[in-house]
Image (cartoon, rainbow, N blue to C red; front, side, top):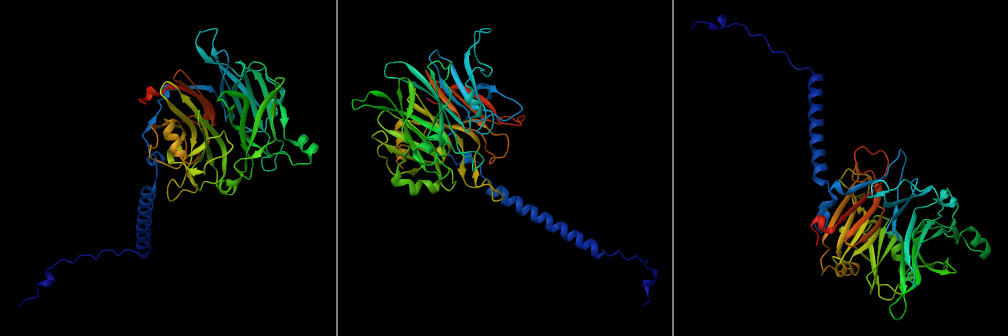
Length: 437
């Protein structure tokens, strides 16, 4: 048998892969696999806070927004009040919490005849320029039918950067044009006279609630609330003598429950007066629980057990206003939920931005008693979404007014992609604009 292999052409041997090339391919495969696994874990654990709501979520269209003030600097933490002549006044610090207090009016423009936001008012008290804390403002109806407006600003130590100095109070007539200089309460001067330590007050007064007499008539007395760095909460009563504000010495809020609420970081309490009950809603700053609530049926003398609220009411700096035309409460706040946005998040909180809960009195009362037999509310409105990550939350403190079914709310935040600092924004709408009846 002949040997035919001699006639077969010789095929060159293929070049073998080098060890370095094999190692490189292996590394690339490992990296690609790891990235795929990490992306799977990220998207598998990613949470949208709005998906955690127990009620429908509605987003307010941008057409309902108005820019009140915007500068190259930081503007934040506003509050809002109605005046006797129908104007609104908004106050806010020129800085994060502390800073010169600015005031603007929402009034009829002489040029257009339409209601517009004014430029910052220049004729304000000199003492406002050195404010140490977020201002709060309230319109008070006196028993003789007249009105007063009060502005309060705490004087905290800012963890040693300032001297604790109680709180300051300024008073105006009902139209909010002329204001007294700050009078100081329970600060260094009081401490020297009494041998006590000055109060280290944060967000004074987060709420200010009018009391009634035994016949159910409102009287010239209001209960204000604030907290300190230990998350001990206090209340103080406001009365007037010869037209001047007088604040009672602060007392600890629900002392028998302090050991429970202080570790949870209860603060920035809002008191909702339903007419027959007071409902307390508070921020839980420790971020290991939802927002907190309890109920009083005797104007704050005693309170029910503090309970956690559902996700749809969890956040910071709640402000409530009633709409008599629909029988609904709207509660504005900064949404902050305890929990991570994803497995890779370093923050222990998440939230979409500035929101508002809407529901009736019975639903709110039930939730504040730890019950859900009346449901969770009608809707949660997304008023302004922060432009950055879900956990970069610096917004939502607001003032809230409702007139004949029309809500006007003013808050601060970076609510559009071009913002480099928080600015002041107003929204004006009716619940029916969002299909809420």
